[in-house]
Picture 1 (cartoon, helix red, strand yellow):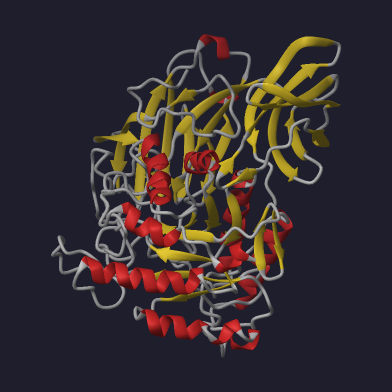
Picture 2 (picture 1 turned 90 degrees about the vertical axis):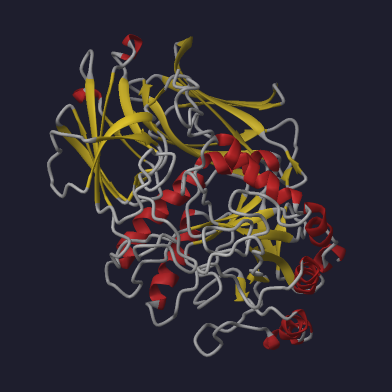
Length: 576
């Protein structure tokens, strides 16, 4: 149910928490744009294809002007077998403030353009036709709205692109029993070959057990049954230990069943998931993956699509972007200034692709007293949603944040992140200005390979000679793992004559000159004994920013093997 091919983005939206029954509400909705009111309109003058934003071609509207308010409406009927169950209404993401009505009843609101939210709507549902209305408010010019790379001007400019307003991820319904599994976190232990699970259950738990079973390629390799409580913690030992790593991303299947204690055959709730045995830790100035110094060959990915803007046209496009990166010899990405959808992380898990989870802090006035409220609430939801993905090897809640804009905000969010997830390293703010961080990263767009290399040469001998973006403002380097998390950005667009186009530095005159520059910049980082990784800007062009290795429509600018041969060379830290 919910997977009809005629429905856009018909695939199951939450691959790490799967129930069999669900109803996809994507498709044609009524829409009214620009009505500023607190009550739903009675007339909807247009149609839109959800989950594509109204700025996109795929939505059927392609309205690029500012859209401060947008109203949606659609009708639905529940399958008869769902009655008697609790009904949950899910939204993958709505940018920025959403309010929801069902059958004329206001059921709730959510603020934050990048994270999922849901409401139980059981009491509002009727047997037959039901009306769902959603209002979204969005203003990238509001200094209290984190908006990432969405333009705060009428048009795109520089490294700011077309805006996304309203619904941009799947909307769906799900029936659950009166008592159901609400959430779980998985903590792998690679030494013991086991996992620790922390789970929460909603509803009455008396007389119920939770059975958790792990499978390795359809073979049962572990099972544990525990009495059900509201909050559970238990261990599951595996008879076969296989690690998740970039070149061998083994995933275990996992199944949870809520079962009546005195009637084992009576299953109340079933949830299917997966996990990877993977450990990230810091040792001797290196970020180790399963105790090995795997050089992180990262590329900047901003998650934009020519026809869907923030929303990939289909699931295949999400997978393809990772495959295109791997084809160039990268083994991961910074998911930059955007919280990517769960289906992207699913493919990263499957393909063994390392990613850093980020937050779209640009657009926010970090010095405003309410900034901490905005960031903290949504960032918690990001970590809660994505905690179980083995592909995520670190968190980075801020990017290029001047210290004068409230350094305590960076410290508070860094410490909150460590509290919510003690299993991964955290960068307080990428590039600058560091306040308190597990990893020390810098941004450098010097285009001359010799000058670029010379900046980092003194660091080979003494830590005090480390290159920093803003040494007079940020905390001193304290021996953390170090890497250049933005470099390159080489301007290359010989076929694009748009005057708005830009990249970093002077454009190479020939393809050979581009490759020579790319090689010089990249090898100086690969072969540096104190670098644990790099991140090249960027995977593909976006609108006027033409420093990608692919065009915006994902056509290679150079033969992939030319870039790949440079990237896959053995790094200095991999030789020790």
